Length: 363
Length: 251
Image (cartoon, rainbow over all chains, first blue to last red; front, side):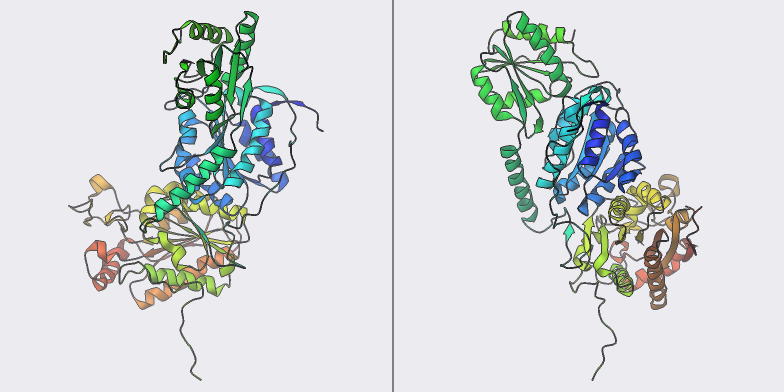
């Protein structure tokens, strides 16, 4: 067993990619994720891997598509504006069922925005993001250790379902150093990819495409994809549930926001307030069932995000109809303090039951 | 015994094409298939399809194919080739794909000297979408989006890609050919074979621009189309080899 080491989130993620067997990285510089390409530009060549700094994020993700189409594990990483440019090819990859990893170390938007931590890309990540009817598998780490662990997991899920997977992190998770063990939890397994485009040597030619013009072909393809997403929803949900038993209020938060919430929960406990937490680790598939079941027992739900209310919609859809749902969010690089979250916890607890408050209490 | 002297290349499928009758895409397809046959690399060739009339190449070439987003074929081909350097990788792109939406990808793929082959069909219009103006549309040429003819004051000038790309160090071979008569087809055959030879010999990026008629969208007969290629296109888009690297003379 390796010892834990003090390491940056972005570096842990990059190292996980190498250990997961990814040998092809294509990317374009953008803050706050540059440690990832910098690390891989140094270490991939030592593993006979390929690192290319592309001319744009559009080219990067299309190179990923090409390499991944041959059956290799391939990835890119970027942030907000760059991820927007990648949506076209991600739609193609979802459509032609080519697995890959896309890392989004989020920065603020809309537009060029700022580089401070945010969770403003939740909708883009979890709603497909590009054109057409599809989803990415989205994993949301909340620690440097999870930047490593979930990156390994993301490659497995991408391969298993032949679908793009995304790590949705932010500047805090990317830039901070924490102790982490950079070793796979399970041995890395790679499966055969008989669909890959490698040259038609011992078989008939095959192709990866997204254009379906004949009557009913496209619908049949989309229904196939839908069945796949249903299996993912059924089998791959990951979430952390904490202190649900006897809680007066359920807080739902992911990533960095969940870390702040945990501190606020401890502060609340000292004041005798019992708070439960559900932290979605997979954002797609979303832990709807866990939230439904918890909100049947706990009548009030507070959603805390670093945006103006995006995961809130998924919680509203998932929670029991009797639950009162409250929201606290700070967008645009505003990082909530535990004290602010504690105030919102108390406000939610004292509010009239059943109010569907979406008031943003940025103060 | 009678001897077969002419047959379909192995790499070309026997599926009837969807191209308009008289369209020279079919000729260009055949020349590419002949080149692949010539080097005996069919089983290790991977094609990258573009968006446009050539998108259905997986129906016509007996090779593995991946379909790229509009203009991105050179980037996709880069990923394929970097992951499988021992494979022969080619893109087949139209002028809207390569010379408009995909300019960034083609320039940087060429500049990196990616060891791939690009077949670039220039017929001066967006064929599949119904004949809109392309970056290669001739001055004065009427299209569905230049009903008064292309005017350089609003639309700029027809772009000469083969010459432009030839200026890049990463390019091993850049040529322009035509398919308007039998002699031109034979020259095109040589150029396309040369382009694949460059890749086989790991010389770097190779491109052949193929002038082609789109008589359907030009609203002329196939024969008139070939005449227009000869009399109107070639004077502006001269045929020839603009770059041919003779050794691995990287800087």
